[in-house]
Length: 389
View 1 (cartoon, rainbow, N blue to C red):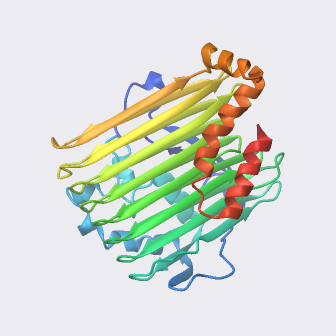
View 2 (cartoon, rainbow, N blue to C red):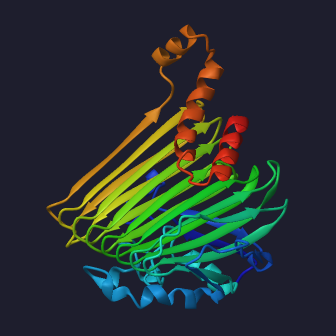
View 3 (cartoon, rainbow, N blue to C red):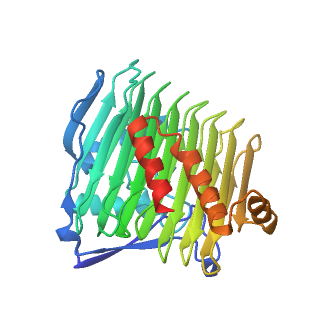
């Protein structure tokens, strides 16, 4: 591996005009050999959950490879977009939002993977909380696989935090496997310092009547890449995804979420709420992909972006792909500034313009923060939101 590494990530499943600058993104890792490995494990595990520690990244992916025959439709498309990265990404154990370059990084640096497995029929009520508290200058990679066996349920909360002025690098790969009737709840809260580069790469597979629920808050960092690619393979599989984001200063956020709907009567709902301020820049890609055989499926993706600055740059690319007739897909985006009418209304209630903006920012972000199932993590996140704005 060279001294520095440039990786192509967040590739749009079907490419569009290059001048729109939404087909993909690039993340740079300086001196990758010096990046540390950081596994995070809870002090205790709930009953019914097994932890297999420090498995090689490739070996941990075998759980997905041996289940490729359970993917409905064209099995060869288990991993790989329709764009020019399809051949490369087909080597992934399960397709992720950022793509194969992240897998290659993990493999080349021998990043170990912690595999959490909840046993068949076990409903784990206590969330597993993994806290990444990073020091100034710290540069880390980490990887997990979360596997929910038949008719089980597990909740995992992951937080990434550092001092506000800190700099560093934090890269996380999380892969999910929900077997028949299982449910995985994954919550990620990112409040890293203003000079942190961060990526969060999620890939998931859901079988018959399973559910994958994602809640993500991207609130810190200077260059942030957030992604998920979820296969809804079995009949009546569901995906629920809710993201809140705040991008300030000259910071940058790049998002790529894909619901790959293959089974019959699958349901995907993806909602994104965020705020861009100052000279911030954000690119959003959200894709509903109805594959052949997904008859009766429903998909909905919505973004609500509030722009609070004349110099912000917002790129939004909602996509619906369809190979099946009997499906229902919806997408929409509400993007704009606070209206004069709303500001006037707020002023008549005694709020000046700055306070009105603060209230609207807080309302958007806290609507997602309230979905965090752990009271301590939720309260800490709400406190962060109240103080950072």
